Length: 257
Image (cartoon, rainbow, N blue to C red; front, side):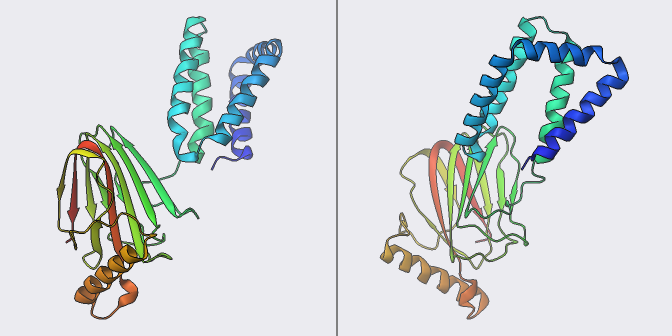
């Protein structure tokens, strides 16, 4: 999360660097430009803040990319000096970089649903042993040249005995590494076309709604049976996994079965 101190610090560093390198003239020119367009700037900031608050955190990347590209095009069309454009981009990067999350492991947050976007670049998703397993993991992958690997072998038990993996895949491949003591079934898979599945399920019955008592009871029985087969009698280790799938022209592979 980016806080106000990070933003203020980045701009102070940028302003100090400009002042030391070129004197006060560039800063005064920027101040005059902002003052002359204060109304438009304030309206733009208000609209940006409203959109930022309204859009969920996991869906902000694409609007930010489009806004950045649009700003670059406008600056080039107005024949703004290239050094000004590059300098502004570096300042923006300096503000945003401290808020980026390191690695692709489970996010350590209070939200029981973790969502991951994988577009073009297939970064892995790893369950860190220090982070509790969420109730849902949503993966949205598009046009990936290599498979996205979900490594769930190292995990910390969460508050729930089940895990739902919700995949939205188009022209993509996803490999899911699971502990052998977990039971796995298919869930909502009707919205698929030309999607191949490789791996062994613990039942051919679809579990589409865990709010249904009968379906939840059936999954719990499968989880306890598989856990007992691999760990003896430790029912506390029993985890039932439901894999939901939507998309087309993709491949999903289960390992560790």
